[in-house]
Length: 148
Image (cartoon, rainbow, N blue to C red; front, side):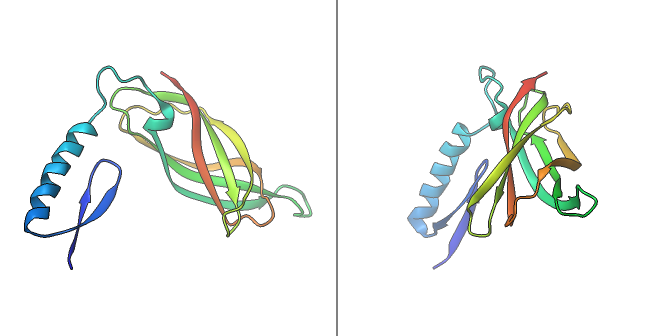
């Protein structure tokens, strides 16, 4: 059985293909496209929704002369998916996880960079917090930001 992958705004899904199902898929994708289009002129700015964080990476660096404590230097990109709002003073939460997904803790930071609609900003050398023993991965999420 073949599968066709359809892509909508922020997700992809697999559907079975067949003579009737293709027309249903076409109709449903038209409806979804109409519902998930661009921001309406009445939609309020929302940094949690509009700012996408990806390309996340991190490295450690010694914070003491004997290297007993390790700091964490983060790198990531923030894309402003809003069609209208610019954001600055972006407050982020960085969560630290083990290989099994257990949350070890978090740090917060503020990125004071103006990000205009439709732009991507790469951030490197963001030194935030200290490494938690057992950290395997980090996640970064937007808590809030000021609309400019």
